[in-house]
Image 1 (tube, rainbow, N blue to C red):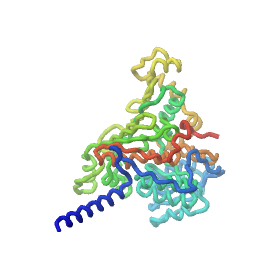
Image 2 (cartoon, one colour):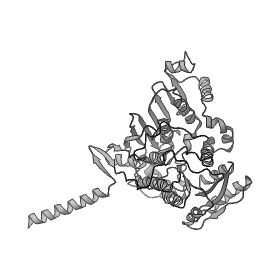
Image 3 (cartoon, rainbow, N blue to C red):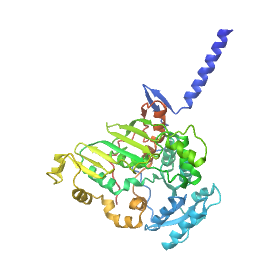
Length: 464
């Protein structure tokens, strides 16, 4: 009887273990966590180099007019070849602020969708909109992204676009099946220093880039209560890992030609305990918090297929100067933006750019840096820099981002950032958490292109 009972208990435990294991989207293989890659449906093809039919006028609808929304409407109203068709938000104040921007720009007032948590669906269903521009809180991005594409619309979505690997695959599959663009609105790839350094790297000034750094370091103490219903601190309360990686990883992925000759391969992550997050929660909510998930500091290391390395830092809790840690280390030189922007070159590189007799152990002098910033200014920036600085948006990089999106759509060109960039720049959110929860175990980064990561050689901005 005891033997039969023991056998039954073992069988039940085995069944429970099997159920638990099958619910996980990954398995452990030789000490590395490996995610399952869903098969691409028959008849569905990748979006590498995808270009949609050109649009004479880009008709847009905006969803989410809170902190960032109205300024996006203002920027689009300044771009030729656009029509702002509709605005959607639960808060009428954000809509009215946006309408005033349209009136000031000499534009017609847009149609309004409000009063219901489902109002955004009506905007997506309109037949006079080409692209839906989404700026809601993170957790609402994916349902809106998917519905908009199913309604036949291109989508632009704020960062991070998706917070889980499952949702990333949903976006990829929907984009591939519907043949609609889905671009993540990562503005930092258009920063003046980053675009200049990218241009310099593409011209070989730093030699072969081996190691890069990126981050989001920004103490949000004075910002937490500005987020509707305190959604951002709430997300940090419930989620561990680098929950906001895109500003740091986006620019360096372009330098490393990710899914354009190289790919993210393996990730490991580590975090500190939560001190400040726990304190902020208590101060804002007036209640104790014994299990604040997000550590005050998270560091992630990623190795690429070609043996390059990326370091990412995330810290929105402790007092520190704002930084995105942008840095490139190459065989012939180095570039860094924080805490002090500068360039350094080896002796051969200095000769090639006619800058001899400079110290190869220190940044070039400020006057030389200014000369290099002008000499290697990215062609796209050079074209619209004056307008970008006048219109603004984080110094103008937001305007450049929107301008480039409209330019590519109007000319039927591949976008600067495709759906696989979205996937790669969001995936550290879940992968860093899983690594940390498994004692900083290595995690294999899924190949979101499903085998076509090296079909294109080198990152390029499409131009007509």
